[in-house]
Length: 275
Image (cartoon, rainbow, N blue to C red; front, side, top):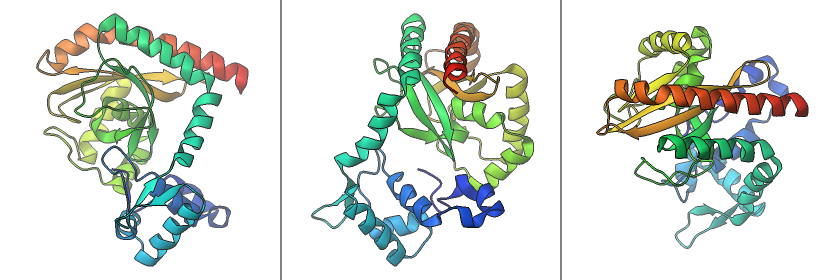
């Protein structure tokens, strides 16, 4: 689930500097839309209030506004669900973002080459969001699609992207989001993650072993922009019963790193010509 009780978390630093420039009401409304996921198909006034850490009356006003705008629809049980209009935002992004199509093709090529699920993710607050994904292979219990999210601290891609932060920023991220345990080996201690972050920076990849899901190993590699800054992460995963993390890294790190470098080159070239 998203970091719910502080919906404007991504705006915190900016708000502290220029509070009059930003709308917390808008941030809370967007946070309600972000509540929806494969596990959360409907919301109520109370669940939204709990999610936002606000009053039920405030959550009610936000939901009714989103309903009036056509983004939510009331069900017979009194809860609210997303409408087809919500697809318009993602459709506009996907149709107008040709770079995702270009990267998706390279993701599919890598998946076919190594016969493992592959994806590209971005960091979004407390989570990573899927931007590209090979749909023909899966290792998760539920089918993940573009736009779906996973806890950043427990995923290889998320750990890689978090490690690119400074130690101070990473500590602040932990304090803000208070990550929870989602599998047997999930890391929820800031000091442990700081130590791992230094190792991730040195080796230029992250890995997980039963941190996101028991029985799952993954590797996350950086996808860099035209300035050499890590913006995205290429992730490959496999069932742990097929091989240990050490074996997975030994067998799949090299081809995944080569693919990440190709994808970075494509991404950087696109940004260079479309900046």
